Length: 79
Image (cartoon, rainbow, N blue to C red; front, side):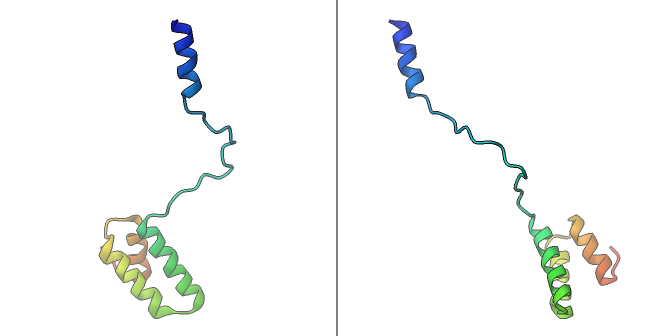
């Protein structure tokens, strides 16, 4: 009786998908990284005011992030 019960439980167990792993895993950007990327887009578009405002917000909102340090350097500020 136990083998029959075991077979029944295995038949009800969830089946995992056999898909292959992704070639490139997807990661989410941190908010600070997203702001840094946005500032780079503003720079490419020639919007210096937008870039400056974005970098200032990045420093204000995420002061301990590595992107805030980059922003400070770009703005000509030291910590």
